[in-house]
Amino acid sequence: MRRFTIKDEKTLNFSVCGQLISKENFLHMKRKINENVLIFVQQGKLYINSNNKNFEISENQFIFLKAEEEHFGYRESPGELKYFWVHFKDELQELSEDELPFQQDLDYFFPETGTIYNSSRLILLFRQMMDFSLEEWNQNKKILNFSLSIFMMEFSKEANSTHKKTNKNNSIINDICNWLKLNFQNDFSLEELSSNFNLQSNYLSKIFKTTMKKSIIQYTTELRIQAAKNLLPNFSVKETAYSCGFQDEKYFMKVFKKNEGITPTEYKQAFSLQNINQ
Image (cartoon, one colour):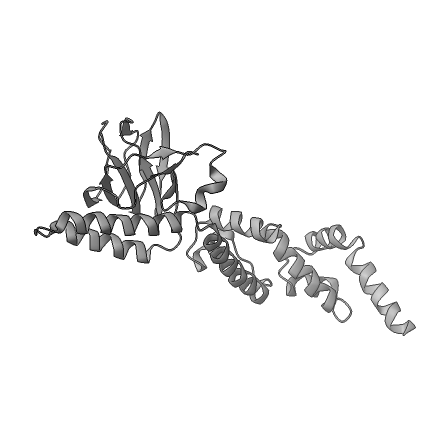
């Protein structure tokens, strides 16, 4: 992924900004212009080719289109599409790998594309910039340049704040784990779990495994097996299986042996002997 900066520029040069709202079948025009463009999607998906590479930009994601590089829509956007856009005239300079360690000293530093995890402040700043662009007075150009500069500095900070993603993911995963601890004995699907937290199932599976180092199925199975170990001394294998969320006794026995190295019956007997010995 390319990374850009705007060196030796304290105040940026605003050109024009706005918001696109399309009900369906939006396809970006093919063009090459002498200004940079930032597109920040609020809703839907934008399919755009830039510098001979296809990008799929979804909600809360952005892309920088560098001046003098051709860009065009390579596929229509299904359904409603909303995004903010702003043009600016400053030269985007691509950073080499050797320069990346020093990016923290730059006022402006942008990955070519990425995700913004806390967009409320940015949207407020952008709407303010849009309001300024509609006003007519002698200092308006200067105000717009300052407004763009503040927005871009904030955007640079948010675009590179990977810890925000981590913190957000950890909070979500913590909530999901708590939910699983309360509901592991019930039969549920990944789609139902995802719906409870307003997340896509693929995304939920990915961040759960990344954070917990195990899948949702593995985590739920561990909860069920631990509960089964507590119940087996006082209940039958069949009663334990159904009480812990296993719909099939034979499957429960198979999973239990795989996880514990012995069958539920052997565990039950060993536990009973231990109690007698004590």
